[in-house]
Amino acid sequence: MDDNNPLKRATPVPLHSSQVPSQPRAQVRSIPDYCQFLSTLRTDLEDHIKSTASTVEHNNIMPRPSLSELIARNRVYEPSHTPFPTFAEIKASGTPGPRVLVVTCADPRCEPYQFLNIAPFDAIAIRCIGGRVEPQIPGILAVDTLFNFEEIAVIHHTDCGATMFTKQDVSRVIKTRAPARADEIDKLEFGDFKDLAGSVKDDLKILRGNPYLSKQLREHAHGYVFDIKTGEVFNVEV
Image 1 (cartoon, helix red, strand yellow):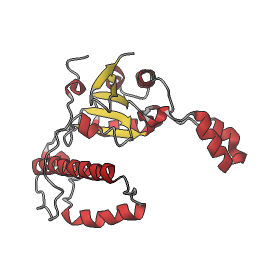
Image 2 (cartoon, one colour):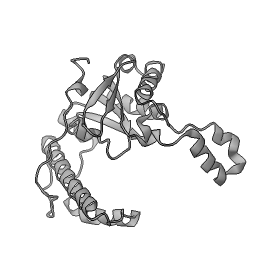
Image 3 (tube, one colour):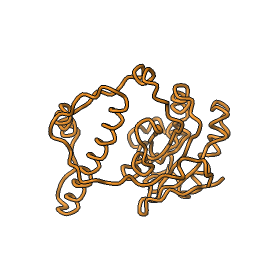
């Protein structure tokens, strides 16, 4: 693996014993304070999520929340919210922009800010079903105009849900909803795959062959697989 690639040095985020705060936090008045706040808040939330997950596993009776319940949680969160800096404030502070763009899966077990130990402004992650890059090309191009990334990483993961459905399965269901649009449905792609390493290689070929991406990103596109059991991120070569 390339010794200069920052992703090689990724380690899991350590969990601490702090609890989710019940009292409002003081207003953050500087970018460094904001970065420290986000790091602390992330640790707090990880502890809360871990505790909640343990309770669910222990009781095996707690239902998943509805949308209205999730929105209600925002009312609890809101008093402790610290305003995020605007782009103008970030630029004025002299804080350097992220160098790395990560494209990975939306699966909650595949949390790049955790398994790559990403601090605020270290990197930006785009998350989608399967972590497939082709549907995300417009977004990649757009965000790159803001940050001029130096490297891009495609990270898929073990036990991905995209290996558990097929184009035929999804198309069959959709056609029952819109049978008159069967021809259009047949042209849709849903990001499914069976070969994990092969899917990463396919996505790297798409990135390296895209004429709209900067030469810098095309030449510095890297592929990885995250193991959800061991926490290891290992390299995939084309």
